[in-house]
Amino acid sequence: MATVKNRVALILAVGIVGGGELGKVPIALPVLSGDFGLSLVEGGLLLGMFQVALMAAGIVAGMMADRFGQRRVMAIGLVIAAIGSALGAMAGSGAQLLASRAVESAGFMAMVLPGPALLGRMVDSRRLRVTMGLWACYMPTGMGLVLLLGPIVIDAVGWRALWWAFTLLPLGLAALVWHRVEPDQPHRTGADGEHRAAPLVIATLTCPGCWLLAGAFACYAGQWMSVFGFLPTFYRGQGLTSATAGLLTAIGALVNVTGNFGSGLLLQRGIAAHRLLLIASLTMLACAWILFASGLPFAARYAAVLAFSAVGGLIPGTLFALTHRYAPTPQAVSTTTGLMQQGSSTGQFIIPPVLAAVVSTAGGWSLAWTVTGALALVNIGLALTMRRRA
Image 1 (cartoon, rainbow, N blue to C red):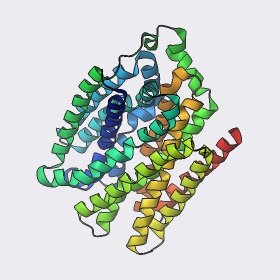
Image 2: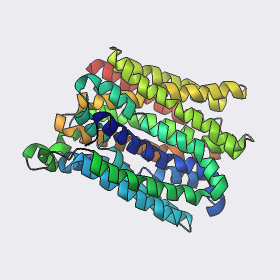
Image 3: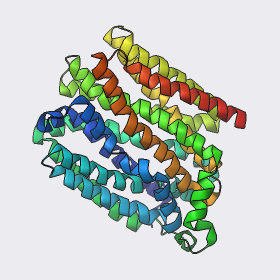
Image 4: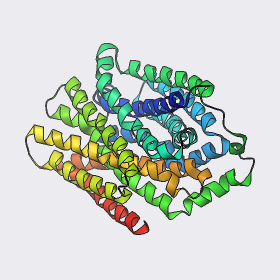
């Protein structure tokens, strides 16, 4: 059996590949739009389609991980994600590509929801917040790496090769998870009442704290994906090349890691969770306005992108760290994470097409910040609610 550090690294690698699955569409979107004749709004739908399964059944998938075993569900999810990517690589129309993304979405859901619970089994309580901060880095790390390397692959061998790469990577990780991660304990298979489906779901759905996490994640994820999902397209409209647009977007996505990991360190030092959420939400509100509506020089607007991502990264890191505190029982951590990810996916599914519609109606990007700004205001209200609960 692998050491604890190696097992933790393996779980983080699964999350990073999941983030890459999400990130491959934004960087390929200009090419996909040309191949399949997609409009901006249809491109927004393609970005959001990855979230369909999580949006519809995140809490159910989390419950399944809690009931039937996190290792088993993660391995199955990796295989499903590989199948979805293979279907996308063979797609002959936009509709087929959308359908393949729905399959990938189901795989992604089963890949990532067991992550916090598995990590909680591997590390002691003193290191849990920092480890959760590391876990929260999976999305920006995976997405950033694909935004950085994807243009090279696409320019050299086409976008389908990128899809085939994300067929092979999950299959390899599935084998490693199955052989290197310790087996699920018998009590996690649903043999006792605490792990039956209905109690897990009911306890989570009736827990106000779980809904606070889900709402905050929805507002954050809707903002972040709306900005970074369209950023390559926005930069192409500014006259930048595909490679340059991808590089700038990748750097912006990768700096999100600093906020994700930093949140764990700050929480470990005793900084209140609601303070981190307030700081991050106010920063995202201001930076979105600078990017889209200020008319400032490009350097200032790009600095705003970096601040939007880096400081905004405090939010997911903080929310993942709170799952063990807000879950109704220790046996419902994956179920709570499922509800939280369900909120995240709802934001990522709904907001990009809404922002695209606003941009198309306005004839430009100057009002895009109003969409993300409204979500930032909601998160400020949720942070204040958490303060009162604390």
